[in-house]
Length: 46
Image (cartoon, rainbow, N blue to C red):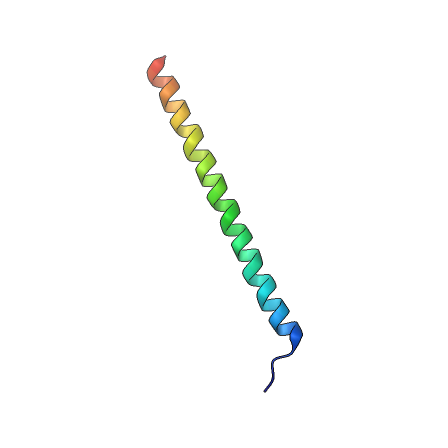
């Protein structure tokens, strides 16, 4: 059975969306980590 183009497009779109979500989560975690480090540094200096 030949997969139709729509199935392939849907699959690619899903993979794309997942990668975007992963990238967003990664960026959010990086920002949280950085701001937490800054906060700890400020607490220590206070």
